[in-house]
Image (tube, rainbow, N blue to C red):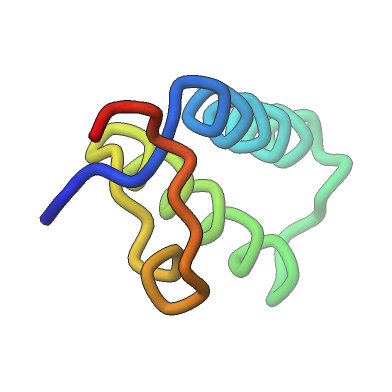
Length: 68
């Protein structure tokens, strides 16, 4: 599994995940299907950021990692 995410991409994904988590914690995103879906996306964003690999990027031919 080659890394295909750059630093900016990772930071943006983690920030989005944090925003979703805070909105859920504050009760702005109420419990229900939408909240569960958003929390799953937040979890996926964190995991892909930690791994440095997004499984959708190769499908679309995207690579934000500057290292070759």
